[in-house]
Length: 443
Image (cartoon, rainbow, N blue to C red):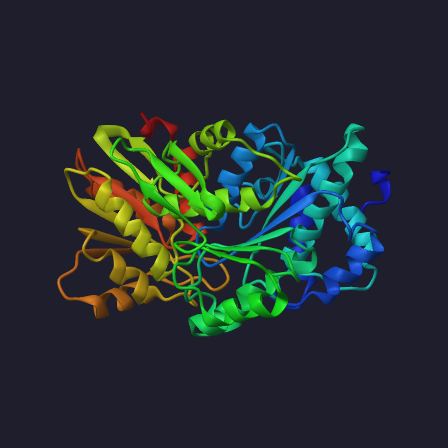
Protein backbone atom coordinates (compact mmCIF):
# COMPACT_ATOMS: atom_id res chain seq x y z
CA UNK A 1 0.00 0.00 0.00
CA UNK A 2 1.22 3.49 -0.82
CA UNK A 3 1.30 5.21 2.56
CA UNK A 4 2.06 8.65 1.12
CA UNK A 5 -1.63 9.46 0.92
CA UNK A 6 -2.53 7.88 4.27
CA UNK A 7 -4.43 10.07 6.69
CA UNK A 8 -1.89 9.41 9.48
CA UNK A 9 1.61 7.96 9.73
CA UNK A 10 1.61 6.49 13.24
CA UNK A 11 -0.62 4.19 15.26
CA UNK A 12 -1.00 6.78 18.01
CA UNK A 13 -2.24 9.36 15.52
CA UNK A 14 -4.82 6.93 14.15
CA UNK A 15 -6.06 5.98 17.62
CA UNK A 16 -6.25 9.55 18.88
CA UNK A 17 -8.32 10.49 15.83
CA UNK A 18 -10.64 7.49 16.22
CA UNK A 19 -11.41 8.60 19.77
CA UNK A 20 -12.96 11.80 18.38
CA UNK A 21 -14.48 10.62 15.10
CA UNK A 22 -17.87 9.35 16.30
CA UNK A 23 -20.31 11.40 18.41
CA UNK A 24 -20.37 8.76 21.15
CA UNK A 25 -17.77 6.24 22.33
CA UNK A 26 -20.32 3.42 22.56
CA UNK A 27 -22.97 3.21 19.83
CA UNK A 28 -24.28 -0.33 19.50
CA UNK A 29 -25.48 -1.48 16.09
CA UNK A 30 -24.30 -3.51 13.11
CA UNK A 31 -25.32 -1.50 10.07
CA UNK A 32 -22.25 0.77 9.90
CA UNK A 33 -19.79 -2.09 10.30
CA UNK A 34 -21.70 -4.36 7.91
CA UNK A 35 -21.69 -1.71 5.16
CA UNK A 36 -17.94 -1.08 5.45
CA UNK A 37 -17.23 -4.82 5.61
CA UNK A 38 -19.14 -5.34 2.37
CA UNK A 39 -17.29 -2.49 0.67
CA UNK A 40 -14.01 -4.16 1.67
CA UNK A 41 -15.26 -7.54 0.32
CA UNK A 42 -14.26 -9.43 3.46
CA UNK A 43 -17.71 -10.24 4.82
CA UNK A 44 -17.43 -13.97 3.97
CA UNK A 45 -14.19 -15.28 5.51
CA UNK A 46 -12.91 -18.73 4.57
CA UNK A 47 -11.59 -19.51 8.04
CA UNK A 48 -13.58 -21.03 10.89
CA UNK A 49 -14.92 -18.77 13.63
CA UNK A 50 -15.61 -19.26 17.33
CA UNK A 51 -17.65 -16.37 18.73
CA UNK A 52 -17.05 -15.92 22.47
CA UNK A 53 -19.54 -13.84 24.45
CA UNK A 54 -20.58 -13.62 28.08
CA UNK A 55 -20.21 -11.42 31.15
CA UNK A 56 -17.05 -12.98 32.60
CA UNK A 57 -14.60 -15.61 31.38
CA UNK A 58 -14.35 -14.49 27.74
CA UNK A 59 -10.69 -13.53 27.80
CA UNK A 60 -9.68 -16.69 29.65
CA UNK A 61 -11.63 -18.85 27.22
CA UNK A 62 -9.96 -17.17 24.24
CA UNK A 63 -6.52 -17.63 25.82
CA UNK A 64 -7.07 -21.36 26.40
CA UNK A 65 -8.62 -21.94 22.97
CA UNK A 66 -5.74 -20.10 21.32
CA UNK A 67 -3.12 -22.06 23.26
CA UNK A 68 -4.73 -25.46 22.58
CA UNK A 69 -5.31 -24.82 18.87
CA UNK A 70 -1.74 -23.62 18.40
CA UNK A 71 -0.46 -26.71 20.23
CA UNK A 72 -2.46 -28.76 17.73
CA UNK A 73 -0.66 -27.04 14.87
CA UNK A 74 -3.35 -24.65 13.66
CA UNK A 75 -2.77 -21.06 12.64
CA UNK A 76 -5.00 -19.00 14.93
CA UNK A 77 -6.23 -15.43 14.73
CA UNK A 78 -7.52 -13.87 17.96
CA UNK A 79 -9.36 -10.62 18.57
CA UNK A 80 -9.90 -9.45 22.14
CA UNK A 81 -10.64 -6.23 23.96
CA UNK A 82 -9.81 -4.12 25.80
CA UNK A 83 -6.02 -4.23 25.88
CA UNK A 84 -3.92 -4.00 29.03
CA UNK A 85 -0.70 -2.23 27.98
CA UNK A 86 -0.61 -2.00 24.16
CA UNK A 87 -3.36 -1.60 21.60
CA UNK A 88 -1.55 -4.23 19.51
CA UNK A 89 -2.60 -6.89 22.07
CA UNK A 90 -6.10 -6.83 20.61
CA UNK A 91 -5.13 -8.58 17.36
CA UNK A 92 -2.94 -11.68 17.36
CA UNK A 93 -1.91 -14.17 14.68
CA UNK A 94 -0.04 -17.30 15.72
CA UNK A 95 0.37 -15.81 19.18
CA UNK A 96 2.08 -12.67 17.88
CA UNK A 97 0.57 -9.24 18.29
CA UNK A 98 -0.19 -7.25 15.16
CA UNK A 99 2.53 -4.68 14.59
CA UNK A 100 1.99 -0.96 14.09
CA UNK A 101 2.40 -1.21 10.32
CA UNK A 102 -0.29 -3.90 9.99
CA UNK A 103 -2.72 -1.88 12.09
CA UNK A 104 -2.04 1.41 10.30
CA UNK A 105 -2.46 -0.20 6.87
CA UNK A 106 -5.72 -1.80 8.01
CA UNK A 107 -6.98 1.54 9.35
CA UNK A 108 -6.14 3.20 6.03
CA UNK A 109 -8.10 0.57 4.06
CA UNK A 110 -11.05 0.98 6.43
CA UNK A 111 -10.90 4.76 6.21
CA UNK A 112 -11.07 4.66 2.41
CA UNK A 113 -13.90 2.11 2.37
CA UNK A 114 -16.06 3.90 4.96
CA UNK A 115 -16.23 7.18 2.97
CA UNK A 116 -18.75 9.27 4.95
CA UNK A 117 -19.72 6.56 7.47
CA UNK A 118 -18.79 7.49 11.03
CA UNK A 119 -17.27 4.64 13.05
CA UNK A 120 -16.56 4.29 16.76
CA UNK A 121 -13.11 3.49 18.15
CA UNK A 122 -14.24 -0.09 18.81
CA UNK A 123 -15.74 -0.49 15.34
CA UNK A 124 -12.50 0.64 13.73
CA UNK A 125 -10.57 -1.90 15.80
CA UNK A 126 -12.98 -4.72 15.03
CA UNK A 127 -12.83 -4.07 11.29
CA UNK A 128 -9.03 -3.86 11.51
CA UNK A 129 -8.88 -7.34 13.05
CA UNK A 130 -11.04 -8.78 10.25
CA UNK A 131 -8.94 -6.98 7.65
CA UNK A 132 -5.64 -8.23 9.11
CA UNK A 133 -6.95 -11.80 9.25
CA UNK A 134 -7.95 -11.49 5.60
CA UNK A 135 -4.61 -10.04 4.52
CA UNK A 136 -2.52 -12.62 6.37
CA UNK A 137 -2.64 -14.94 3.37
CA UNK A 138 -1.89 -12.09 0.97
CA UNK A 139 1.04 -10.80 3.03
CA UNK A 140 2.65 -14.19 3.67
CA UNK A 141 1.77 -16.01 0.47
CA UNK A 142 0.24 -18.94 2.31
CA UNK A 143 -3.26 -20.12 3.14
CA UNK A 144 -3.86 -17.61 5.93
CA UNK A 145 -5.37 -18.48 9.29
CA UNK A 146 -7.31 -21.67 9.99
CA UNK A 147 -9.60 -20.27 12.64
CA UNK A 148 -10.45 -16.96 14.32
CA UNK A 149 -11.40 -16.52 17.96
CA UNK A 150 -13.57 -13.44 18.33
CA UNK A 151 -14.29 -12.02 21.77
CA UNK A 152 -17.54 -10.07 21.85
CA UNK A 153 -16.88 -6.69 23.43
CA UNK A 154 -20.29 -5.92 24.96
CA UNK A 155 -23.55 -7.79 24.91
CA UNK A 156 -23.71 -9.68 21.65
CA UNK A 157 -26.73 -8.89 19.52
CA UNK A 158 -25.59 -5.39 18.52
CA UNK A 159 -21.86 -5.71 19.15
CA UNK A 160 -19.70 -4.96 16.09
CA UNK A 161 -18.01 -8.38 16.31
CA UNK A 162 -21.38 -10.03 15.71
CA UNK A 163 -21.39 -8.89 12.08
CA UNK A 164 -19.64 -12.19 11.24
CA UNK A 165 -21.17 -15.65 11.74
CA UNK A 166 -19.60 -18.07 14.18
CA UNK A 167 -19.37 -21.79 13.45
CA UNK A 168 -19.67 -22.26 17.21
CA UNK A 169 -20.90 -19.71 19.75
CA UNK A 170 -19.81 -19.65 23.38
CA UNK A 171 -21.65 -17.84 26.17
CA UNK A 172 -19.30 -18.17 29.12
CA UNK A 173 -21.55 -16.65 31.81
CA UNK A 174 -24.46 -14.25 32.22
CA UNK A 175 -24.54 -11.71 35.03
CA UNK A 176 -25.30 -8.05 35.66
CA UNK A 177 -22.94 -5.62 33.91
CA UNK A 178 -23.18 -2.74 31.40
CA UNK A 179 -26.76 -2.15 32.58
CA UNK A 180 -27.07 1.16 30.72
CA UNK A 181 -26.76 -0.70 27.42
CA UNK A 182 -27.80 -4.30 28.12
CA UNK A 183 -30.50 -4.13 30.79
CA UNK A 184 -30.79 -4.57 34.53
CA UNK A 185 -31.64 -8.28 34.90
CA UNK A 186 -30.21 -11.62 33.73
CA UNK A 187 -33.12 -12.40 31.43
CA UNK A 188 -32.73 -9.16 29.47
CA UNK A 189 -28.95 -9.46 29.38
CA UNK A 190 -29.27 -13.13 28.40
CA UNK A 191 -31.31 -12.07 25.36
CA UNK A 192 -28.56 -9.70 24.30
CA UNK A 193 -25.88 -12.37 24.78
CA UNK A 194 -27.97 -14.83 22.76
CA UNK A 195 -27.68 -12.52 19.77
CA UNK A 196 -24.43 -14.27 18.76
CA UNK A 197 -26.28 -17.54 18.09
CA UNK A 198 -26.83 -18.60 14.49
CA UNK A 199 -29.48 -20.74 12.82
CA UNK A 200 -28.70 -24.43 13.31
CA UNK A 201 -25.19 -23.83 14.66
CA UNK A 202 -24.18 -25.09 18.12
CA UNK A 203 -23.77 -22.96 21.21
CA UNK A 204 -21.85 -23.76 24.38
CA UNK A 205 -23.17 -22.25 27.61
CA UNK A 206 -20.84 -22.18 30.61
CA UNK A 207 -23.48 -20.71 32.91
CA UNK A 208 -24.99 -23.34 35.21
CA UNK A 209 -28.26 -21.34 35.29
CA UNK A 210 -28.70 -20.05 31.74
CA UNK A 211 -31.41 -17.40 31.40
CA UNK A 212 -34.64 -18.64 29.85
CA UNK A 213 -34.27 -16.05 27.10
CA UNK A 214 -31.05 -17.69 25.92
CA UNK A 215 -32.48 -21.22 26.06
CA UNK A 216 -35.62 -20.24 24.19
CA UNK A 217 -33.68 -18.35 21.52
CA UNK A 218 -31.47 -21.38 20.90
CA UNK A 219 -34.58 -23.52 20.53
CA UNK A 220 -36.18 -21.07 18.12
CA UNK A 221 -33.07 -21.05 15.94
CA UNK A 222 -32.65 -24.80 16.03
CA UNK A 223 -29.21 -24.24 17.55
CA UNK A 224 -28.03 -27.27 19.55
CA UNK A 225 -27.42 -26.05 23.12
CA UNK A 226 -24.63 -27.60 25.19
CA UNK A 227 -24.99 -26.61 28.84
CA UNK A 228 -22.48 -27.21 31.58
CA UNK A 229 -23.64 -29.94 33.99
CA UNK A 230 -26.11 -31.16 31.38
CA UNK A 231 -24.55 -31.95 28.00
CA UNK A 232 -20.99 -31.60 29.30
CA UNK A 233 -19.14 -31.08 32.55
CA UNK A 234 -16.06 -31.82 34.61
CA UNK A 235 -14.90 -33.50 37.82
CA UNK A 236 -11.81 -32.98 39.94
CA UNK A 237 -9.59 -35.94 40.79
CA UNK A 238 -7.81 -36.81 44.02
CA UNK A 239 -4.39 -36.52 42.35
CA UNK A 240 -4.95 -32.86 41.51
CA UNK A 241 -5.92 -33.45 37.88
CA UNK A 242 -9.42 -33.16 36.44
CA UNK A 243 -11.61 -34.95 33.93
CA UNK A 244 -13.93 -33.65 31.23
CA UNK A 245 -17.03 -35.47 30.03
CA UNK A 246 -19.42 -34.80 27.19
CA UNK A 247 -22.33 -36.27 25.30
CA UNK A 248 -21.84 -39.67 23.68
CA UNK A 249 -19.58 -41.03 26.43
CA UNK A 250 -16.75 -38.67 25.49
CA UNK A 251 -14.18 -38.39 28.28
CA UNK A 252 -10.79 -36.76 28.73
CA UNK A 253 -9.34 -38.08 32.00
CA UNK A 254 -6.36 -36.87 34.00
CA UNK A 255 -6.09 -33.40 32.43
CA UNK A 256 -3.69 -30.86 33.95
CA UNK A 257 -5.17 -27.92 35.83
CA UNK A 258 -5.11 -24.78 33.62
CA UNK A 259 -2.16 -22.46 34.12
CA UNK A 260 -4.68 -19.63 34.53
CA UNK A 261 -5.28 -19.60 38.27
CA UNK A 262 -8.64 -19.90 39.99
CA UNK A 263 -11.24 -22.64 40.55
CA UNK A 264 -13.55 -20.97 38.01
CA UNK A 265 -10.99 -21.66 35.28
CA UNK A 266 -12.02 -25.32 35.25
CA UNK A 267 -15.50 -24.23 34.21
CA UNK A 268 -14.01 -22.06 31.45
CA UNK A 269 -11.72 -24.90 30.34
CA UNK A 270 -14.64 -27.34 30.22
CA UNK A 271 -16.53 -24.98 27.90
CA UNK A 272 -13.45 -24.60 25.73
CA UNK A 273 -13.14 -28.38 25.29
CA UNK A 274 -16.84 -28.62 24.43
CA UNK A 275 -16.38 -25.97 21.74
CA UNK A 276 -13.39 -27.83 20.33
CA UNK A 277 -15.41 -31.04 20.15
CA UNK A 278 -18.10 -29.20 18.19
CA UNK A 279 -15.55 -27.95 15.67
CA UNK A 280 -14.80 -31.49 14.51
CA UNK A 281 -14.15 -32.64 11.82
CA UNK A 282 -13.09 -29.24 10.41
CA UNK A 283 -10.70 -28.66 13.30
CA UNK A 284 -9.44 -31.82 15.03
CA UNK A 285 -7.63 -31.55 18.37
CA UNK A 286 -6.30 -34.49 20.37
CA UNK A 287 -5.82 -34.92 24.10
CA UNK A 288 -2.11 -34.11 24.04
CA UNK A 289 -2.79 -30.70 22.46
CA UNK A 290 -5.52 -30.01 25.02
CA UNK A 291 -3.16 -30.83 27.89
CA UNK A 292 -0.28 -28.81 26.45
CA UNK A 293 -2.52 -25.83 25.67
CA UNK A 294 -4.03 -25.74 29.15
CA UNK A 295 -0.55 -25.70 30.71
CA UNK A 296 0.81 -22.97 28.41
CA UNK A 297 -2.08 -20.48 28.33
CA UNK A 298 -1.29 -17.02 29.68
CA UNK A 299 -3.40 -13.91 30.14
CA UNK A 300 -2.43 -10.59 31.69
CA UNK A 301 -4.62 -9.22 34.45
CA UNK A 302 -6.42 -12.46 35.36
CA UNK A 303 -5.12 -13.41 38.79
CA UNK A 304 -1.69 -12.40 37.54
CA UNK A 305 0.81 -12.89 40.36
CA UNK A 306 3.91 -10.70 40.51
CA UNK A 307 6.43 -11.05 43.37
CA UNK A 308 7.66 -7.75 44.79
CA UNK A 309 10.57 -6.95 47.06
CA UNK A 310 10.44 -7.75 50.80
CA UNK A 311 8.39 -10.94 50.28
CA UNK A 312 5.31 -8.99 49.21
CA UNK A 313 3.07 -10.39 46.47
CA UNK A 314 1.02 -8.37 43.98
CA UNK A 315 -2.05 -9.98 42.41
CA UNK A 316 -3.67 -8.20 39.47
CA UNK A 317 -7.20 -9.01 38.36
CA UNK A 318 -9.52 -6.99 36.12
CA UNK A 319 -12.62 -8.07 38.08
CA UNK A 320 -15.14 -5.22 37.75
CA UNK A 321 -18.54 -6.73 38.53
CA UNK A 322 -19.85 -8.71 41.51
CA UNK A 323 -19.66 -12.12 39.80
CA UNK A 324 -16.01 -11.57 38.86
CA UNK A 325 -15.22 -10.17 42.32
CA UNK A 326 -16.76 -13.26 43.92
CA UNK A 327 -14.54 -15.47 41.74
CA UNK A 328 -11.53 -13.36 42.71
CA UNK A 329 -12.41 -13.72 46.40
CA UNK A 330 -12.66 -17.49 46.04
CA UNK A 331 -9.29 -17.65 44.27
CA UNK A 332 -7.70 -15.50 46.97
CA UNK A 333 -9.04 -17.86 49.64
CA UNK A 334 -7.20 -20.73 47.95
CA UNK A 335 -3.99 -18.74 47.43
CA UNK A 336 -1.81 -18.86 50.57
CA UNK A 337 -1.12 -15.59 52.35
CA UNK A 338 0.23 -15.39 55.88
CA UNK A 339 -0.07 -11.65 56.21
CA UNK A 340 -2.59 -8.94 55.39
CA UNK A 341 -4.38 -8.15 52.13
CA UNK A 342 -4.29 -4.59 50.80
CA UNK A 343 -6.80 -3.86 48.02
CA UNK A 344 -6.00 -1.23 45.40
CA UNK A 345 -9.22 -0.33 43.62
CA UNK A 346 -10.28 2.03 40.84
CA UNK A 347 -13.61 1.65 39.03
CA UNK A 348 -15.90 3.14 36.41
CA UNK A 349 -18.97 5.01 37.56
CA UNK A 350 -21.48 2.77 35.76
CA UNK A 351 -20.36 -0.39 37.58
CA UNK A 352 -21.90 -1.95 40.68
CA UNK A 353 -19.21 -0.54 42.96
CA UNK A 354 -20.88 -1.54 46.21
CA UNK A 355 -21.50 -5.05 44.89
CA UNK A 356 -17.84 -5.52 43.99
CA UNK A 357 -16.70 -4.20 47.37
CA UNK A 358 -19.14 -6.45 49.19
CA UNK A 359 -17.56 -9.55 47.66
CA UNK A 360 -14.11 -8.51 48.90
CA UNK A 361 -14.98 -7.26 52.39
CA UNK A 362 -13.93 -10.45 54.19
CA UNK A 363 -10.65 -10.54 52.27
CA UNK A 364 -9.47 -6.93 52.53
CA UNK A 365 -7.56 -5.62 55.54
CA UNK A 366 -7.06 -2.18 54.00
CA UNK A 367 -8.45 -0.32 51.00
CA UNK A 368 -6.48 2.02 48.75
CA UNK A 369 -9.01 3.87 46.60
CA UNK A 370 -7.87 5.46 43.37
CA UNK A 371 -9.48 8.00 41.09
CA UNK A 372 -9.60 7.11 37.39
CA UNK A 373 -9.06 10.12 35.11
CA UNK A 374 -10.86 8.53 32.15
CA UNK A 375 -14.32 8.78 30.65
CA UNK A 376 -16.80 7.28 33.13
CA UNK A 377 -14.06 7.04 35.77
CA UNK A 378 -14.89 7.51 39.46
CA UNK A 379 -13.06 9.68 41.96
CA UNK A 380 -11.53 8.24 45.12
CA UNK A 381 -14.24 10.07 47.07
CA UNK A 382 -16.93 8.23 45.07
CA UNK A 383 -15.37 4.91 46.08
CA UNK A 384 -14.99 6.01 49.69
CA UNK A 385 -18.69 6.82 49.91
CA UNK A 386 -19.59 3.40 48.55
CA UNK A 387 -17.20 1.70 50.99
CA UNK A 388 -18.66 3.65 53.92
CA UNK A 389 -22.05 2.12 53.16
CA UNK A 390 -20.52 -1.36 53.37
CA UNK A 391 -19.45 -1.05 57.00
CA UNK A 392 -17.85 1.11 59.68
CA UNK A 393 -14.25 1.11 60.81
CA UNK A 394 -12.79 -0.06 57.51
CA UNK A 395 -9.21 1.03 56.92
CA UNK A 396 -9.16 3.10 53.76
CA UNK A 397 -7.08 5.78 52.10
CA UNK A 398 -7.81 7.88 49.04
CA UNK A 399 -5.48 8.77 46.17
CA UNK A 400 -5.77 10.86 42.99
CA UNK A 401 -4.66 8.04 40.70
CA UNK A 402 -3.76 4.36 40.51
CA UNK A 403 0.02 4.84 40.70
CA UNK A 404 -0.32 6.79 43.95
CA UNK A 405 -2.70 4.20 45.40
CA UNK A 406 -0.28 1.40 44.56
CA UNK A 407 2.59 3.34 46.15
CA UNK A 408 0.47 3.84 49.26
CA UNK A 409 -0.36 0.14 49.46
CA UNK A 410 3.30 -0.83 49.09
CA UNK A 411 4.27 1.58 51.86
CA UNK A 412 1.74 -0.02 54.20
CA UNK A 413 2.55 -3.62 53.24
CA UNK A 414 4.86 -5.73 55.40
CA UNK A 415 6.76 -8.93 54.50
CA UNK A 416 4.24 -11.72 53.92
CA UNK A 417 1.45 -9.33 52.88
CA UNK A 418 -0.17 -9.17 49.47
CA UNK A 419 -1.54 -6.32 47.36
CA UNK A 420 -4.63 -7.10 45.29
CA UNK A 421 -5.27 -4.75 42.36
CA UNK A 422 -8.77 -4.88 40.86
CA UNK A 423 -11.88 -2.98 39.75
CA UNK A 424 -11.06 -2.16 36.12
CA UNK A 425 -8.72 -2.78 33.22
CA UNK A 426 -7.58 0.80 33.77
CA UNK A 427 -6.56 -0.02 37.35
CA UNK A 428 -4.51 -3.06 36.34
CA UNK A 429 -2.92 -1.12 33.49
CA UNK A 430 -1.97 1.70 35.84
CA UNK A 431 -0.17 -0.66 38.21
CA UNK A 432 1.63 -2.54 35.43
CA UNK A 433 2.87 0.79 34.07
CA UNK A 434 4.01 1.80 37.57
CA UNK A 435 5.93 -1.45 37.86
CA UNK A 436 7.51 -0.88 34.46
CA UNK A 437 8.85 2.43 35.77
CA UNK A 438 10.24 0.76 38.87
CA UNK A 439 11.60 -2.60 37.78
CA UNK A 440 13.93 -2.57 40.79
CA UNK A 441 10.88 -3.29 42.94
CA UNK A 442 10.42 -6.71 41.35
CA UNK A 443 12.55 -9.58 42.53
